[in-house]
Length: 81
Image 1 (cartoon, rainbow, N blue to C red):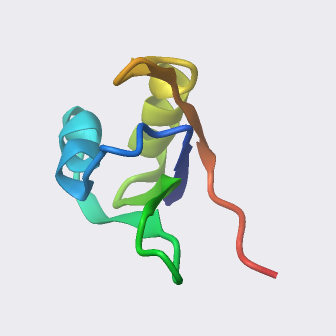
Image 2: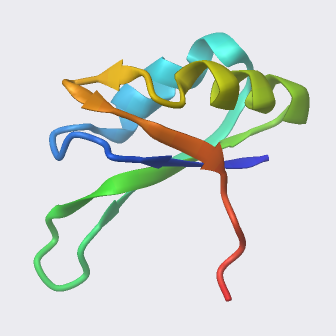
């Protein structure tokens, strides 16, 4: 399952995201998104987890939680249109 993680601090790294989600099970991939033109972080990323049930636990537990002084927005990622 692919999870959207928004409202990240601009200092957050892929390693930070991996550590945050590690207790919820196997992580397939992690990506933080940067602006194409400036290369600066855009404040969101994606975590892909192997098990859907564990991913749902992560979404439930981490949505609204404080991370680096910001309340995270965590939900199932929607496919691009």
